[in-house]
Length: 182
Image 1 (spheres, rainbow, N blue to C red):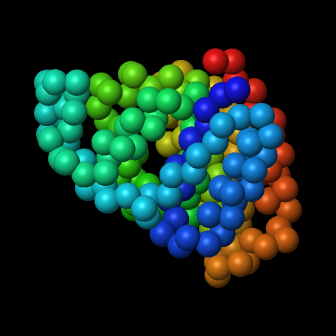
Image 2 (spheres, rainbow, N blue to C red):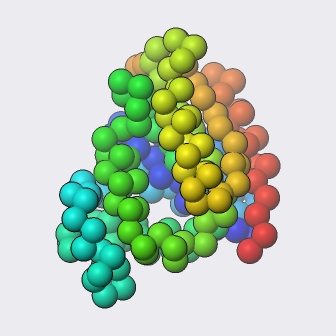
């Protein structure tokens, strides 16, 4: 049984991204221990790029906020899924703050082997997810992570638009298909 963490970047608790993350989690829970971390529940300040974490004891950030809680959870994760609404062709600011704070040597303590990506966007443009997918691929390459899969949902703007959408079943199926040796 693997430990799967889902970082959900939506500030809307019952929004389309949250529903997508829940469907994925339901699929993973058939065989794995899973937790959804909602960025909206954590007070995380943005990284200021000072790099003091490289020299500090245990690579701790000087900023004392809820990121310390997230670090501890990621130290237990075998698989990480990132779920985000798409705002102006990027991930949410709440999620971006968390990801930027992973610029620390502490990330080498995370046992994460696989990464999945779940995105929901209001627009229907074919290139809606392109910039995020480039970043995702770069992260996979840099950290030598296995791509666990992506679910990309276009045309879901208002809360509830995703209800009944085939992507919820796809997210569940992706979650259920996660294999990870621990």
